[in-house]
Figure 1 (tube, helix red, strand yellow):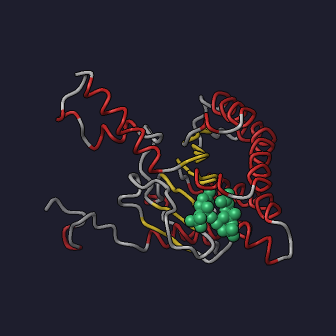
Figure 2 (tube, helix red, strand yellow; figure 1 turned 180 degrees about the vertical axis):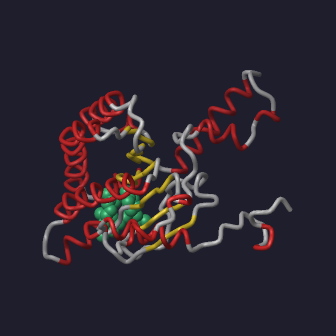
Length: 249
Ligand code: IPE
Ligand code: IPE
Ligand code: MG
């Protein structure tokens, strides 16, 4: 019996987000340059997407480049941008054919032009697709999007377009770059690191967190299924006590 067969299809998370970490260490452990790890990591993206399609995950968010990642050596940043453009350009036909809809979150305008153009074209091309929503977090920072959202709400308030009571949790959902995307029920981080690194801080309020020692380039479909099984073994209480769950008390 395969791992996927053990998954309860009724309670598969609608949205899984992954902090794809450990590419550099994977490459270095083999005496290779860090960029080789990033290149190999693209194969793991295919694995995660295939696994998501197999079990019916509707949203798969991948943390591909954080705002803090600009602080890496220039050569690595350039290599990552180049990889991004080439990967999207090379995969978009197949993604479109398999009904995947591509979205981006983050400050896309802050990416090099060829990168933001390629991303915008891929989003546009796949926008009528109804299969898995692949959300790429690029030049993303949770604090950045919260700050930007707070400013837009403050400006609406200053203009008298909204009242204080209009500022609700739902209103904040709407001003984030994830507007329209449900909160992730499960966040996976690879490579043995136990932190969120400025990823989906608002949206992660009730996410289950799954940490694995596996380095991202080694991540395979079974690792994805293992994370879902771990999620399904948890009791999500949302502040209640066990006895209340599934009842109207
Ligand atoms: C994750 O792998 C990919 C990106 C952040 C772009 P890393 O490059 O962070 O790999 P480690 O953590 O140095 O091993
Ligand atoms: C988080 O990984 C960002 C991405 C996976 C894109 P990092 O490797 O940049 O995070 P830190 O620096 O270890 O927190
Ligand atoms: Mg890292």
